[in-house]
Image 1 (cartoon, rainbow, N blue to C red):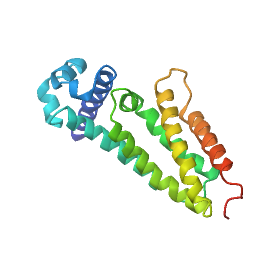
Image 2: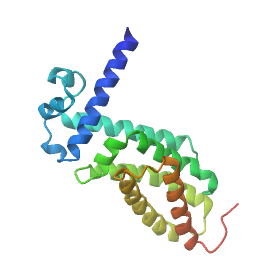
Image 3: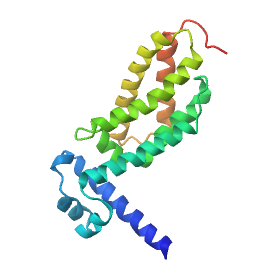
Image 4: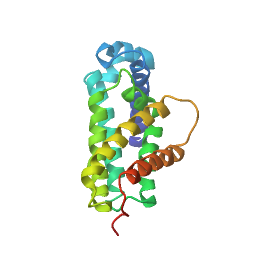
Length: 195
């Protein structure tokens, strides 16, 4: 019985997440009401309030879940030299984005949450800069600027991918992002990586 209840709760929360994503494509979070959201997903207000106190509580819950997923992906790929072996980490990030495409598209979109984007950037930056320090210990001053360039470019790449219907897989996008990052880093590192 508990499993059936859990499944029902997951289904309701997923409906609310998708409904919020749809509404965020049209307007900012401060313009979305609980009434409008529950009408969108065809549930009653009392069901919404069983799980969340307001629209912002729902949004923060969604963002926290995504943050945990990204953090888990980072922990699954400990710091090591940035080589072809780093590709699975990039693939994991794109897989998470793909599995949450609708809400990520909304969060990265015009009416999205810039604070959430910065939180994701910071989370990934700490890990990635540690990797780059290990890989290129003598070039870290130069690399921090090329990395900032790559990070901003990757956010643009993610936005374009989430907003397109061309069907590239997370693996294809990870490979594109990885190659762009590697080319940028190589342009600023005349010497070979540390062994």
